[in-house]
Length: 176
Image (cartoon, rainbow, N blue to C red; front, top):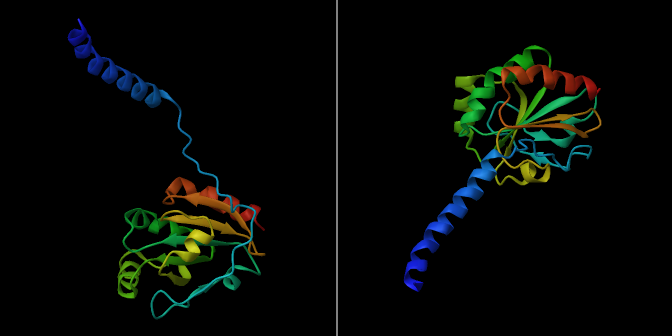
């Protein structure tokens, strides 16, 4: 009798795990991760240029005058390629975009910009992701709306798609 019962235990455990997995798949997911840095000032930073020809990036470049976008990206990032046309569209509408290249080599940054366009007014090299982590970014690409006083007003996680452009323009307008 006991040996017969032991044959059913693995089947019961399997059915239990399938049931839990099925239940979890039916639950609604929250895709948005709220940053703890929204409403906080940018930390102090000064990054060397990511490649010769453009200036590096510092906190002071994101303060004064008007709101700006701060785009965290990398040449090795595939979603960064897909967002390149949208960044150029934003730049064409007068948006100033400051870039931070994460763990990248100057020649790779230059090749990426030559191939996919350069919407950036400046690009800093964050070789060890220190600034990226300090502003609450956990991946690439991510884009932040920074107001004229250097406060983080909005965070867009993931690549910017065509339908995200109006949202970012509205967030920049709100940040004035």
